[in-house]
Length: 221
Image 1 (cartoon, one colour):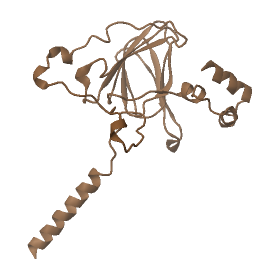
Image 2 (cartoon, helix red, strand yellow):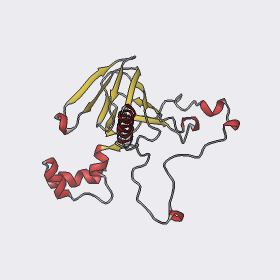
Image 3 (cartoon, helix red, strand yellow):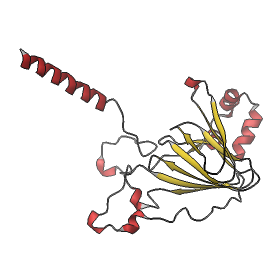
Image 4 (cartoon, one colour):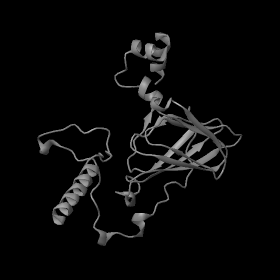
């Protein structure tokens, strides 16, 4: 009788382990993957081929990609320099991306989100106003702080967030994301700059704006 009980407990634990293992979908590394039956016409985009470990060297795990300041002479007054697996081969399969952001006075990194990665930001020089907005399930609450050199702030995966230089000097910040392809959705570009454009009547109703204002915004993006 004891071995039967032991067998039942073992099967229950095994079944629970399978249930837990299959309850979570692995994070995708592309925006979408349309199923195709003809494998010859398929395209593999979810990763990179790997270099023979015997042929690797220290240079594969080294980069100077974030040394130089970016050009902030643009409408946003900011520059985002991304260091991902395409520029830094040693990052492949490690689930990491790095970013340098330069902000001129009043420079902004507009509201955006990363559908496949959380992000932690560290300010090295200047003063930066940052924040994110929770989902509607949490009441669309704003979580914002003013950061100074040495301060850090985390943006949870998928939530809309932003940064704004409110100080008198330029700002430099560095971020790390826990995905080698976290994705980027700039809110305004997505809503007003889609291709083809979203029906302006829909946007006017959704944003409670005059249709002419919506059409003007669509022209800008």
